[in-house]
Image (cartoon, rainbow, N blue to C red; front, side):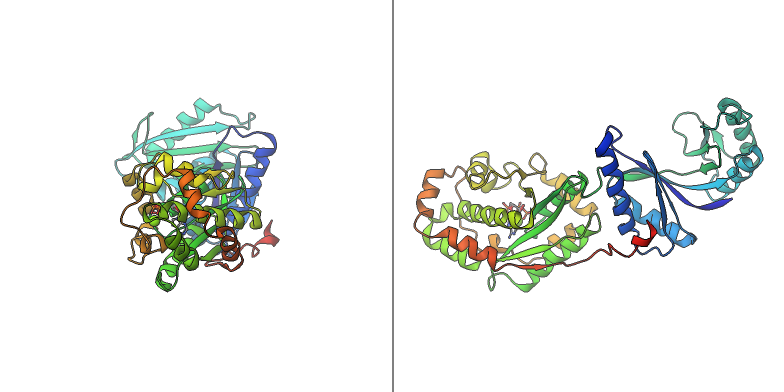
Amino acid sequence: MNWNTILIRYGEMSLKGKNKSKFVRKLKENIKVALSELTTLKMRAERDRMFIYTERLEELDRAVEILPTVFGIQSFSPIAICEPTLEAIKETSLKVLSKTETEGKTFKVDVKRTNKSFPLDTGELQQELGGHVLRTFPNLIVKMKKPEILLYVEIQREAAYISSHTYRGAGGMPVGSNGHSLLLLSGGIDSPVAGYQMMKRGVAFDAIHFASPPFTSDLALQKVEDIVRQLTKFGSTIRLHIIPFTELQQAIIKQVPSNLTMTTTRRMMMKIADRVREETGALGLITGESMGQVASQTLESLTTINEVTSTPVLRPLIAMDKLDIIQIAEKIETYEISIRPFEDCCTVFTPPSSKTKPQLEKVLYYESFQSFDEMVEEAVKNRTTVIPSQRIEDVFDDLL
Ligand code: ATP
Ligand code: MG
Protein backbone atom coordinates (compact mmCIF):
# COMPACT_ATOMS: atom_id res chain seq x y z
CA MET A 1 0.00 0.00 0.00
CA ASN A 2 1.09 3.49 -0.84
CA TRP A 3 -0.37 6.27 1.35
CA ASN A 4 1.25 9.41 0.01
CA THR A 5 -1.13 10.80 -2.56
CA ILE A 6 -3.87 13.43 -2.65
CA LEU A 7 -6.60 13.30 -5.26
CA ILE A 8 -7.78 16.80 -6.24
CA ARG A 9 -11.15 17.38 -7.93
CA TYR A 10 -11.81 20.53 -9.98
CA GLY A 11 -14.76 22.87 -9.85
CA GLU A 12 -16.49 24.54 -12.79
CA MET A 13 -17.22 21.31 -14.59
CA SER A 14 -19.13 23.18 -17.26
CA LEU A 15 -15.90 24.56 -18.74
CA LYS A 16 -15.10 23.10 -22.11
CA GLY A 17 -12.34 22.84 -24.68
CA LYS A 18 -9.60 25.45 -24.55
CA ASN A 19 -10.98 27.08 -21.40
CA LYS A 20 -10.76 23.78 -19.63
CA SER A 21 -7.13 23.15 -20.53
CA LYS A 22 -6.24 26.71 -19.53
CA PHE A 23 -8.02 26.16 -16.22
CA VAL A 24 -6.11 22.93 -15.56
CA ARG A 25 -2.76 24.39 -16.57
CA LYS A 26 -3.24 27.42 -14.34
CA LEU A 27 -4.46 25.34 -11.42
CA LYS A 28 -1.44 23.08 -11.68
CA GLU A 29 0.86 26.11 -11.68
CA ASN A 30 -0.93 27.68 -8.69
CA ILE A 31 -0.86 24.48 -6.64
CA LYS A 32 2.82 24.11 -7.38
CA VAL A 33 3.44 27.62 -6.08
CA ALA A 34 1.17 27.22 -3.04
CA LEU A 35 2.98 24.01 -2.09
CA SER A 36 6.45 25.24 -2.95
CA GLU A 37 7.67 24.56 0.61
CA LEU A 38 7.18 20.82 -0.01
CA THR A 39 10.51 19.37 -1.04
CA THR A 40 9.31 16.11 -2.58
CA LEU A 41 6.20 17.25 -4.45
CA LYS A 42 5.23 15.58 -7.73
CA MET A 43 2.09 16.27 -9.76
CA ARG A 44 0.04 14.63 -12.48
CA ALA A 45 -2.95 16.40 -14.03
CA GLU A 46 -5.81 14.75 -15.89
CA ARG A 47 -8.83 16.38 -17.52
CA ASP A 48 -11.05 16.28 -14.47
CA ARG A 49 -8.69 15.72 -11.59
CA MET A 50 -5.13 15.90 -10.43
CA PHE A 51 -2.87 13.77 -8.28
CA ILE A 52 -0.12 15.12 -6.09
CA TYR A 53 2.46 12.93 -4.39
CA THR A 54 4.98 13.51 -1.66
CA GLU A 55 7.51 11.09 -0.27
CA ARG A 56 7.21 12.44 3.26
CA LEU A 57 4.09 12.00 5.32
CA GLU A 58 4.49 15.28 7.21
CA GLU A 59 4.52 17.05 3.85
CA LEU A 60 1.22 15.42 2.98
CA ASP A 61 -0.26 16.85 6.19
CA ARG A 62 1.05 20.28 5.26
CA ALA A 63 -0.56 19.98 1.82
CA VAL A 64 -3.90 19.19 3.49
CA GLU A 65 -3.56 22.46 5.43
CA ILE A 66 -2.64 24.59 2.42
CA LEU A 67 -4.88 23.22 -0.36
CA PRO A 68 -8.12 24.81 1.00
CA THR A 69 -6.64 28.24 0.12
CA VAL A 70 -6.20 27.43 -3.56
CA PHE A 71 -9.03 28.58 -5.83
CA GLY A 72 -10.27 26.17 -8.49
CA ILE A 73 -10.32 23.11 -6.23
CA GLN A 74 -13.77 21.67 -5.50
CA SER A 75 -12.63 18.98 -3.05
CA PHE A 76 -9.65 16.78 -2.30
CA SER A 77 -8.96 13.48 -0.56
CA PRO A 78 -5.80 11.85 0.72
CA ILE A 79 -5.85 8.41 -0.90
CA ALA A 80 -4.16 5.08 -0.37
CA ILE A 81 -3.18 3.26 -3.54
CA CYS A 82 -3.04 -0.56 -3.76
CA GLU A 83 -3.22 -3.47 -6.21
CA PRO A 84 -6.64 -3.78 -7.82
CA THR A 85 -7.38 -7.13 -6.16
CA LEU A 86 -10.12 -7.89 -3.65
CA GLU A 87 -7.61 -8.98 -0.99
CA ALA A 88 -5.49 -5.84 -1.29
CA ILE A 89 -8.55 -3.59 -1.34
CA LYS A 90 -9.94 -5.21 1.83
CA GLU A 91 -6.66 -4.93 3.66
CA THR A 92 -6.05 -1.34 2.56
CA SER A 93 -9.60 -0.28 3.49
CA LEU A 94 -9.00 -1.43 7.04
CA LYS A 95 -5.68 0.40 7.21
CA VAL A 96 -7.27 3.60 5.94
CA LEU A 97 -10.10 3.36 8.45
CA SER A 98 -7.73 2.62 11.30
CA LYS A 99 -6.37 6.16 10.84
CA THR A 100 -9.84 7.60 11.39
CA GLU A 101 -11.90 7.99 14.55
CA THR A 102 -14.64 5.39 13.98
CA GLU A 103 -16.27 5.00 17.40
CA GLY A 104 -20.05 5.39 17.05
CA LYS A 105 -19.73 7.03 13.60
CA THR A 106 -22.09 6.44 10.68
CA PHE A 107 -20.55 4.90 7.61
CA LYS A 108 -21.05 3.82 4.01
CA VAL A 109 -18.94 2.24 1.27
CA ASP A 110 -19.01 3.85 -2.15
CA VAL A 111 -17.42 1.92 -5.01
CA LYS A 112 -16.59 3.21 -8.45
CA ARG A 113 -15.37 0.58 -10.88
CA THR A 114 -13.80 1.70 -14.16
CA ASN A 115 -12.08 -1.66 -14.52
CA LYS A 116 -15.00 -3.69 -15.83
CA SER A 117 -13.01 -6.93 -15.80
CA PHE A 118 -12.95 -6.90 -11.99
CA PRO A 119 -14.61 -10.18 -10.82
CA LEU A 120 -17.27 -8.53 -8.59
CA ASP A 121 -19.73 -5.89 -9.75
CA THR A 122 -20.24 -2.63 -7.85
CA GLY A 123 -23.12 -3.87 -5.67
CA GLU A 124 -21.35 -7.10 -4.74
CA LEU A 125 -18.19 -5.21 -3.89
CA GLN A 126 -20.04 -2.76 -1.68
CA GLN A 127 -21.65 -5.67 0.21
CA GLU A 128 -18.41 -7.60 0.53
CA LEU A 129 -16.36 -4.60 1.68
CA GLY A 130 -19.07 -3.28 4.01
CA GLY A 131 -19.29 -6.68 5.76
CA HIS A 132 -15.52 -6.91 6.02
CA VAL A 133 -15.20 -3.45 7.55
CA LEU A 134 -18.06 -4.03 10.04
CA ARG A 135 -16.45 -7.25 11.31
CA THR A 136 -13.32 -5.27 12.24
CA PHE A 137 -15.07 -2.05 13.34
CA PRO A 138 -18.35 -3.28 14.90
CA ASN A 139 -19.02 0.17 16.38
CA LEU A 140 -19.61 1.72 12.96
CA ILE A 141 -23.26 2.27 12.04
CA VAL A 142 -24.26 1.84 8.41
CA LYS A 143 -26.10 4.86 7.00
CA MET A 144 -26.84 5.38 3.31
CA LYS A 145 -27.64 9.13 3.39
CA LYS A 146 -24.97 11.59 4.54
CA PRO A 147 -22.77 9.18 6.48
CA GLU A 148 -20.01 10.70 8.63
CA ILE A 149 -17.41 8.42 7.09
CA LEU A 150 -17.54 7.61 3.39
CA LEU A 151 -15.13 4.87 2.43
CA TYR A 152 -14.54 5.67 -1.23
CA VAL A 153 -13.03 2.92 -3.38
CA GLU A 154 -12.15 3.47 -7.01
CA ILE A 155 -10.93 0.52 -9.04
CA GLN A 156 -8.87 1.24 -12.12
CA ARG A 157 -7.06 -1.23 -14.36
CA GLU A 158 -3.63 -0.72 -12.77
CA ALA A 159 -4.54 0.31 -9.24
CA ALA A 160 -7.26 0.93 -6.68
CA TYR A 161 -7.67 4.24 -4.80
CA ILE A 162 -9.13 4.28 -1.31
CA SER A 163 -10.04 7.26 0.88
CA SER A 164 -12.03 7.85 4.04
CA HIS A 165 -12.13 11.62 4.09
CA THR A 166 -12.93 14.33 1.55
CA TYR A 167 -12.00 17.94 2.32
CA ARG A 168 -13.85 20.89 0.87
CA GLY A 169 -11.83 23.08 -1.49
CA ALA A 170 -12.09 26.86 -1.89
CA GLY A 171 -14.15 26.54 -5.09
CA GLY A 172 -13.96 29.30 -7.68
CA MET A 173 -11.42 29.39 -10.51
CA PRO A 174 -7.61 29.33 -10.54
CA VAL A 175 -6.18 32.83 -9.98
CA GLY A 176 -4.89 34.13 -13.30
CA SER A 177 -7.23 32.04 -15.45
CA ASN A 178 -9.43 35.12 -15.97
CA GLY A 179 -6.87 37.80 -16.72
CA HIS A 180 -5.26 40.64 -14.81
CA SER A 181 -6.74 43.75 -13.17
CA LEU A 182 -5.71 46.55 -10.78
CA LEU A 183 -7.14 46.67 -7.24
CA LEU A 184 -7.61 50.06 -5.53
CA LEU A 185 -6.46 49.09 -2.06
CA SER A 186 -7.07 51.57 0.76
CA GLY A 187 -6.17 49.67 3.91
CA GLY A 188 -9.84 49.70 5.00
CA ILE A 189 -11.97 46.62 5.52
CA ASP A 190 -13.68 46.50 2.13
CA SER A 191 -11.05 46.65 -0.60
CA PRO A 192 -9.07 43.56 0.57
CA VAL A 193 -12.32 41.58 0.51
CA ALA A 194 -13.07 42.90 -2.98
CA GLY A 195 -9.66 41.65 -4.11
CA TYR A 196 -10.27 38.26 -2.54
CA GLN A 197 -13.66 37.94 -4.24
CA MET A 198 -12.17 38.65 -7.66
CA MET A 199 -9.30 36.21 -7.03
CA LYS A 200 -11.95 33.62 -6.37
CA ARG A 201 -13.25 34.19 -9.89
CA GLY A 202 -9.79 33.69 -11.33
CA VAL A 203 -8.71 37.35 -11.66
CA ALA A 204 -5.09 38.15 -10.77
CA PHE A 205 -4.18 41.75 -9.95
CA ASP A 206 -1.65 44.41 -9.03
CA ALA A 207 -2.69 46.76 -6.21
CA ILE A 208 -2.56 50.56 -6.11
CA HIS A 209 -2.54 52.67 -2.95
CA PHE A 210 -2.80 56.44 -2.58
CA ALA A 211 -0.65 57.84 0.21
CA SER A 212 -0.47 61.43 1.42
CA PRO A 213 2.65 61.83 3.51
CA PRO A 214 3.26 63.48 5.93
CA PHE A 215 -0.48 63.43 6.69
CA THR A 216 -0.53 59.65 6.38
CA SER A 217 2.15 57.72 8.24
CA ASP A 218 4.57 54.94 7.36
CA LEU A 219 2.45 52.72 9.55
CA ALA A 220 -0.51 53.20 7.19
CA LEU A 221 1.73 52.02 4.39
CA GLN A 222 2.96 49.10 6.45
CA LYS A 223 -0.67 48.13 6.98
CA VAL A 224 -1.35 48.03 3.24
CA GLU A 225 1.78 45.96 2.65
CA ASP A 226 0.66 43.52 5.33
CA ILE A 227 -2.74 43.20 3.64
CA VAL A 228 -1.03 42.50 0.32
CA ARG A 229 1.09 39.86 2.04
CA GLN A 230 -2.02 38.20 3.41
CA LEU A 231 -3.86 38.30 0.04
CA THR A 232 -0.84 36.78 -1.68
CA LYS A 233 -1.57 33.56 0.22
CA PHE A 234 -4.69 33.04 -1.90
CA GLY A 235 -3.20 33.78 -5.29
CA SER A 236 -0.17 34.91 -7.15
CA THR A 237 2.46 37.54 -6.40
CA ILE A 238 0.89 41.00 -6.04
CA ARG A 239 2.79 44.13 -7.05
CA LEU A 240 1.87 47.21 -5.03
CA HIS A 241 2.02 50.65 -6.67
CA ILE A 242 2.21 53.49 -4.17
CA ILE A 243 1.06 56.86 -5.47
CA PRO A 244 2.24 60.14 -3.89
CA PHE A 245 -1.12 61.88 -3.54
CA THR A 246 -0.45 64.83 -1.19
CA GLU A 247 -0.08 67.58 -3.79
CA LEU A 248 -3.18 66.52 -5.64
CA GLN A 249 -5.26 66.40 -2.50
CA GLN A 250 -4.09 69.85 -1.46
CA ALA A 251 -4.92 71.21 -4.90
CA ILE A 252 -8.37 69.65 -4.72
CA ILE A 253 -9.06 71.26 -1.36
CA LYS A 254 -7.99 74.62 -2.75
CA GLN A 255 -10.08 74.47 -5.93
CA VAL A 256 -13.19 72.53 -5.09
CA PRO A 257 -15.88 73.41 -2.51
CA SER A 258 -15.66 71.07 0.44
CA ASN A 259 -18.89 69.19 -0.27
CA LEU A 260 -17.48 68.11 -3.65
CA THR A 261 -13.86 67.38 -2.70
CA MET A 262 -14.64 63.71 -2.07
CA THR A 263 -16.08 63.36 -5.57
CA THR A 264 -13.08 64.98 -7.24
CA THR A 265 -10.66 63.00 -5.05
CA ARG A 266 -12.26 59.77 -6.19
CA ARG A 267 -12.24 60.89 -9.81
CA MET A 268 -8.50 61.65 -9.62
CA MET A 269 -7.87 58.29 -8.00
CA MET A 270 -9.73 56.59 -10.82
CA LYS A 271 -7.81 58.57 -13.46
CA ILE A 272 -4.46 57.66 -11.92
CA ALA A 273 -5.46 54.05 -11.42
CA ASP A 274 -6.59 53.82 -15.02
CA ARG A 275 -3.25 55.14 -16.27
CA VAL A 276 -1.32 52.67 -14.12
CA ARG A 277 -3.65 49.92 -15.35
CA GLU A 278 -2.84 50.90 -18.92
CA GLU A 279 0.91 50.88 -18.27
CA THR A 280 0.80 47.47 -16.60
CA GLY A 281 -1.36 45.94 -19.33
CA ALA A 282 -4.23 45.10 -16.97
CA LEU A 283 -7.80 45.05 -18.24
CA GLY A 284 -10.02 46.14 -15.36
CA LEU A 285 -10.14 48.13 -12.11
CA ILE A 286 -11.40 46.63 -8.83
CA THR A 287 -12.81 48.66 -5.92
CA GLY A 288 -14.39 47.86 -2.56
CA GLU A 289 -17.44 50.06 -3.12
CA SER A 290 -20.75 48.90 -1.71
CA MET A 291 -24.06 50.50 -2.61
CA GLY A 292 -25.15 53.29 -0.28
CA GLN A 293 -22.43 52.72 2.31
CA VAL A 294 -21.12 56.30 2.26
CA ALA A 295 -21.83 59.51 0.32
CA SER A 296 -19.43 58.56 -2.47
CA GLN A 297 -21.21 55.25 -3.02
CA THR A 298 -24.66 56.35 -4.14
CA LEU A 299 -25.60 55.62 -7.73
CA GLU A 300 -25.34 59.35 -8.53
CA SER A 301 -21.84 59.55 -7.00
CA LEU A 302 -20.66 56.39 -8.71
CA THR A 303 -21.87 57.79 -12.04
CA THR A 304 -19.99 61.07 -11.60
CA ILE A 305 -16.84 59.29 -10.43
CA ASN A 306 -17.00 56.66 -13.13
CA GLU A 307 -17.24 59.34 -15.83
CA VAL A 308 -13.42 59.55 -16.03
CA THR A 309 -13.02 56.11 -17.59
CA SER A 310 -14.66 53.55 -19.84
CA THR A 311 -12.54 50.74 -18.36
CA PRO A 312 -14.66 48.05 -16.66
CA VAL A 313 -14.77 48.78 -12.92
CA LEU A 314 -15.37 45.55 -11.01
CA ARG A 315 -17.21 46.10 -7.72
CA PRO A 316 -17.74 42.66 -6.23
CA LEU A 317 -19.08 44.07 -2.93
CA ILE A 318 -21.68 46.36 -4.50
CA ALA A 319 -24.65 44.30 -3.25
CA MET A 320 -23.18 43.07 0.01
CA ASP A 321 -24.03 44.08 3.58
CA LYS A 322 -21.22 45.38 5.79
CA LEU A 323 -21.63 42.49 8.23
CA ASP A 324 -21.18 39.93 5.48
CA ILE A 325 -18.10 41.79 4.22
CA ILE A 326 -16.65 41.77 7.75
CA GLN A 327 -17.30 38.06 8.02
CA ILE A 328 -15.22 37.39 4.91
CA ALA A 329 -12.51 39.81 6.10
CA GLU A 330 -12.27 37.80 9.31
CA LYS A 331 -12.17 34.51 7.46
CA ILE A 332 -9.33 35.63 5.19
CA GLU A 333 -7.56 37.29 8.13
CA THR A 334 -7.35 40.80 6.72
CA TYR A 335 -9.81 42.22 9.27
CA GLU A 336 -7.32 42.51 12.13
CA ILE A 337 -4.89 44.32 9.85
CA SER A 338 -7.57 46.65 8.43
CA ILE A 339 -8.74 47.87 11.84
CA ARG A 340 -5.28 49.06 12.89
CA PRO A 341 -5.84 52.75 13.63
CA PHE A 342 -3.67 54.34 10.92
CA GLU A 343 -5.62 56.59 8.66
CA ASP A 344 -5.39 56.63 4.88
CA CYS A 345 -5.48 59.75 2.71
CA CYS A 346 -9.27 59.85 2.47
CA THR A 347 -9.89 59.76 6.18
CA VAL A 348 -7.29 62.47 6.79
CA PHE A 349 -8.84 64.84 4.24
CA THR A 350 -12.49 64.00 4.86
CA PRO A 351 -14.65 67.15 4.65
CA PRO A 352 -17.45 67.74 7.21
CA SER A 353 -20.09 66.66 4.68
CA SER A 354 -20.14 65.40 1.10
CA LYS A 355 -22.82 65.65 -1.56
CA THR A 356 -24.67 62.38 -2.10
CA LYS A 357 -25.80 63.58 -5.56
CA PRO A 358 -22.78 65.39 -7.02
CA GLN A 359 -23.60 66.95 -10.39
CA LEU A 360 -21.06 66.25 -13.10
CA GLU A 361 -21.31 69.76 -14.62
CA LYS A 362 -20.45 71.39 -11.31
CA VAL A 363 -17.57 69.03 -10.66
CA LEU A 364 -16.16 69.63 -14.15
CA TYR A 365 -16.50 73.37 -13.65
CA TYR A 366 -14.42 73.41 -10.46
CA GLU A 367 -11.87 70.98 -11.86
CA SER A 368 -11.33 73.27 -14.87
CA PHE A 369 -9.38 75.82 -12.79
CA GLN A 370 -6.43 73.52 -12.23
CA SER A 371 -4.34 71.46 -14.64
CA PHE A 372 -5.33 68.24 -12.90
CA ASP A 373 -4.40 66.06 -15.86
CA GLU A 374 -0.76 67.13 -15.59
CA MET A 375 -0.80 66.42 -11.87
CA VAL A 376 -2.29 62.99 -12.61
CA GLU A 377 0.55 62.22 -15.04
CA GLU A 378 3.10 63.43 -12.51
CA ALA A 379 1.66 61.18 -9.79
CA VAL A 380 1.66 58.18 -12.16
CA LYS A 381 5.30 58.87 -13.04
CA ASN A 382 6.38 59.26 -9.40
CA ARG A 383 4.89 56.03 -8.14
CA THR A 384 6.98 53.48 -6.34
CA THR A 385 6.33 49.79 -6.92
CA VAL A 386 7.08 47.16 -4.32
CA ILE A 387 6.44 43.43 -3.99
CA PRO A 388 5.65 42.90 -0.31
CA SER A 389 5.69 39.14 -0.61
CA GLN A 390 7.03 37.09 -3.45
CA ARG A 391 5.82 33.62 -4.12
CA ILE A 392 8.52 31.18 -5.08
CA GLU A 393 7.35 30.66 -8.63
CA ASP A 394 10.41 29.09 -10.21
CA VAL A 395 11.55 26.63 -7.60
CA PHE A 396 9.75 23.59 -8.94
CA ASP A 397 10.02 24.08 -12.66
CA ASP A 398 12.06 20.92 -12.99
CA LEU A 399 9.24 18.84 -11.54
CA LEU A 400 6.74 19.50 -14.32
P1 ATP B 1 -12.41 50.45 2.16
O1 ATP B 1 -12.91 49.71 3.36
O2 ATP B 1 -11.90 49.55 1.08
O3 ATP B 1 -11.47 51.55 2.52
P2 ATP B 1 -14.56 52.28 2.21
O4 ATP B 1 -15.83 51.67 2.69
O5 ATP B 1 -13.72 53.06 3.17
O6 ATP B 1 -13.69 51.14 1.52
P3 ATP B 1 -14.36 54.51 0.40
O7 ATP B 1 -13.48 55.23 1.35
O8 ATP B 1 -15.52 55.23 -0.21
O9 ATP B 1 -14.99 53.19 1.00
O10 ATP B 1 -13.48 53.93 -0.77
C1 ATP B 1 -14.09 53.25 -1.82
C2 ATP B 1 -13.03 52.48 -2.57
O11 ATP B 1 -12.06 53.35 -3.15
C3 ATP B 1 -12.22 51.56 -1.67
O12 ATP B 1 -12.86 50.33 -1.43
C4 ATP B 1 -10.96 51.40 -2.48
O13 ATP B 1 -11.16 50.46 -3.52
C5 ATP B 1 -10.78 52.79 -3.09
N1 ATP B 1 -9.90 53.61 -2.22
C6 ATP B 1 -10.28 54.49 -1.26
N2 ATP B 1 -9.19 55.05 -0.68
C7 ATP B 1 -8.11 54.52 -1.27
C8 ATP B 1 -6.69 54.69 -1.10
N3 ATP B 1 -6.16 55.49 -0.21
N4 ATP B 1 -5.87 53.94 -1.90
C9 ATP B 1 -6.39 53.11 -2.83
N5 ATP B 1 -7.70 52.91 -3.01
C10 ATP B 1 -8.57 53.62 -2.26
MG1 MG C 1 -11.72 53.40 3.33
